[in-house]
Image (cartoon, rainbow, N blue to C red; front, side, top):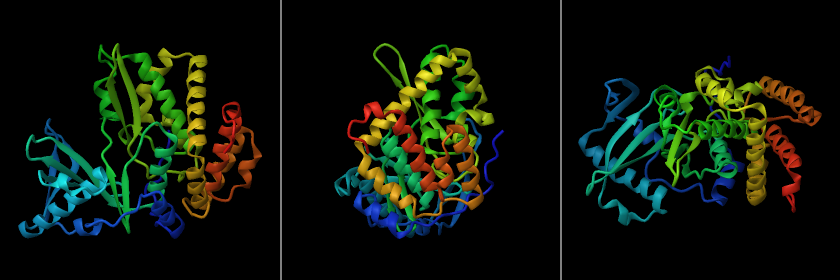
Length: 349
């Protein structure tokens, strides 16, 4: 069973990463930051529709302060969604602000509601952490998912990633008669491979969601990570493979029941080829990001040493042993992927 580090240390956003964020339009001046929201007056526990404690708290500000907070958060929403077009703000208001006192980022979750039809959307206000930003960027570049976020100082604004939380899906949906079992199993194998390729750790069931899309003749599934704090941090190879987390056992057993080893290898190869193609398309951006990562300290020295030895054994490639930090380990991992898919990379990276 995997053992996650009890408390991942915070890594500040340094100058090379700041320059990268500005170059790729990820850094913008925000009207309100994390520290501004941290001065709420009181909070009450938030319960779901079934009356279960969600472990989030709804926070409240003074009436005079709330008016200003509402206006600024609506402006942040317009920056996130419409590149700052404030005409969308007229019919929007902040319906609720929730706070999670657990986890590394201690996020605020803002619910924005449309006055005309009561439709609502969410976004998150978190403490900026270099690990998380690298995780978001790698998700944007290497996965089939696009990620929207804004960084300013010590604040990061993140778009909500919609889907059914993995733990809820495993509990309530695995036995659904309408479930396309084979398609779900295939998607978990591909998700497992994506995490291992880009070294995203801690994909316990509550750190990803399952997005269900009705297709013309059936249902499609997409598993999406929602927590990126453990990007290139842990020292054990198994920490980057969701299949080894205990609370994912029901879906792992589900996959083993439906898929034989040859089919699993086929799906893994398909996903690696797709990632190799994404690297080819975004090679200059990925190189800029990798250059920043190699100047960073993103983990503890003992974790770096342990991971590079495990990966050297796994891939039978001693080049991992020459790596001095997590950025170099990730670059080596991606080079191995590219080498094994060189037939689809005409121009290289």
